[in-house]
Amino acid sequence: MGLLDNLLSLIGLGPTVPMRDLAMGDPQAKQFVSEVQRANFSGVDAVVSQMKDGAWDDRDFLLEVVAEVALAKLPAADQIFDAWCKNQPTSSVAHLLKARHAMLSAWQARGGGTSDTVGDEGERLFGERLQVAEQAFLQAADLEPQDPTPWAHMIHVRMCGLGGDVNLGLGLFGEVTQRDPLHRSGHMQLIAGLAHKWSGAGHEPMFQFARNVVATAPEGSDVAMTIAMAHVERWVWDYLFKEDEAAAELYLQDSKNQA
View 1 (cartoon, rainbow, N blue to C red):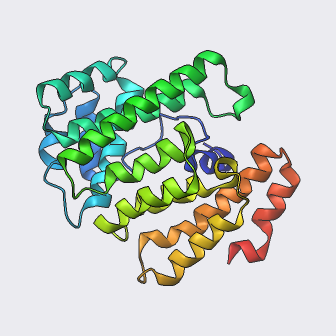
View 2 (cartoon, rainbow, N blue to C red):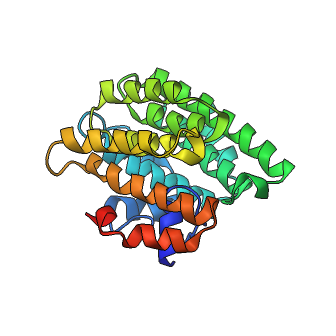
């Protein structure tokens, strides 16, 4: 997987590459990868359901790993998650995984290109699956009111998919931060939503948000990565949307952007 694919995958436009280490060396995630490939979710439910206050980011990471493995390895994953939600309607983990899988499969159907590359069928499936994801996220939010995770990913569903303006995104972000002010994914999802390719508002609102986050974040906090992600989004605009590889390369090489 080259630099380009890595950069694109960071903001949801790169190819899905099942061969990469989804677990990122994490022992618990590695165990889940093995179990999920056998369609065994009992261990996932037992562990993740106990990860709450102070562990929301770790919980979110494990759910991401499980959803990506399910998408890559289990052709009937949507049916498995539907059955799980039906059999255990009060399990927030089941609804979160149904939502995460639906969100990933929506992008799989759409493809990673610009809107002019998306066919009618891809567009239809994209919208339908994101609606499934949103409803499952809302159900998870009802079941576990203190969890910021569903609100974080609804930022993506709305601002980068079903349509939603900046005010809606900021409202969803407020739901995230009142539950966890330093929730990593919530900050990353809002950066994506504020990107010019989705918001149409130019690059400055995204960078202003990122600068404000970095200025107020505690030392060592993961949310300081927002400024790096803003630069990735800005690079993608030149490379993919303007199709100006030279400008994109110059942007990365500019010392002001590397600081």
